[in-house]
Image 1 (cartoon, helix red, strand yellow):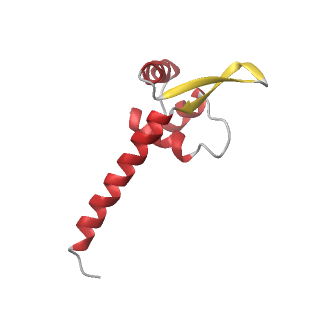
Image 2: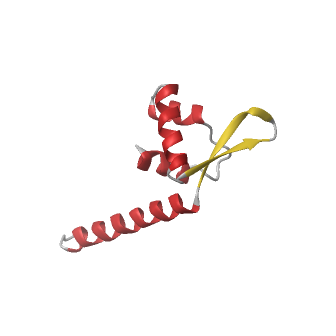
Image 3: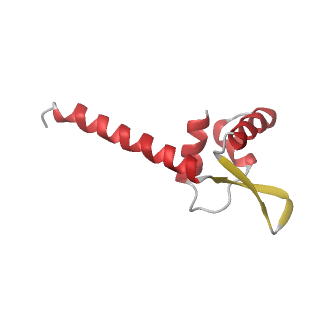
Length: 91
């Protein structure tokens, strides 16, 4: 689940602030489930919850450099694997 959330945050990081409610909606999970997952991700240095200046109740979710590096490494490995698998196939 952490990997899916990292991927979601990574893909959508340029589209504006992403909040816990967005994660809940994207993955169809309850608030309590999302809270537990996000707390663990924060503890493991994968995300940071940052306050937004327009609403003190909201905390946007931001990937840490560690999470970005992990995600990019996974993508690189998957692309290599796909290349290897496709190399043996004809058009």
